[in-house]
Image (cartoon, rainbow, N blue to C red; front, top):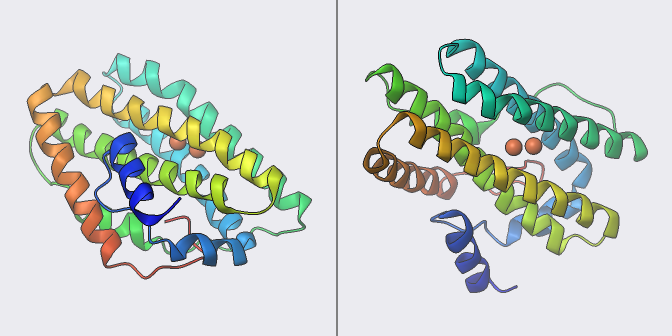
Length: 205
Ligand SMILES: [Fe+2]
Ligand SMILES: [Fe+2]
C-alpha cells in the first residue's frame, strides 16, 4: 500500500487526520521485541483505564455495561501479547514513559460538567484505540512473520470495535453535536501530537 492509499484508508475508517509515517513499519519490524513489550503495557493500560472509568463513574449504568466486557477483552489481549513474548523468550522490562499518551493527556479539556469530563476520558480512550487500530493494521500488512500478521489482524478488528464503543458512549452522555465538534478537535490535536513525535520503532505509538 502506498502512502496515499494508507492515508485514505486511515481517514475513511477512523477519521485520523495524519497517517502513520511509513518509516515506522520498517523500524518497528526491526525491533519487534520492543514493540511487543510496549504493546503489552498498552493492553494493561487499556484494561486499567476501563476499570478506572467504571469506578469513577459508578452512576453510569450504560458505561459499566459496555466497558465490563472491554476490560476482559483488553486483559485477554495482554495475555495474548505475553504469550507471544514467552514464545520468543522476551522478558517484561520496566514501564516506559509514554510520550504519545502524555501529550494527549495534556490536550484534555479541564473543567466543565461531569458529563463533559467523562467525555474527555472517553475521547482519550477512543483516540488511543483508533491509532492503535491503524498501527496494528500496518503491522498486519507489513511484517514478514505470518503468525504475527494474523495476530495483529485479529487485534486490529477488536480495537476498532473498542473505538466505536467509546464514541457511542460519548453519544450516550453528550449531545451528538457536542461529540461531533469535540471529536473533530481531538482528531486535529492528535495529528499535531503525532507530527511532533519522533518516529520510534520501539513504540506502538
Ligand atoms: Fe487491546
Ligand atoms: Fe482496545
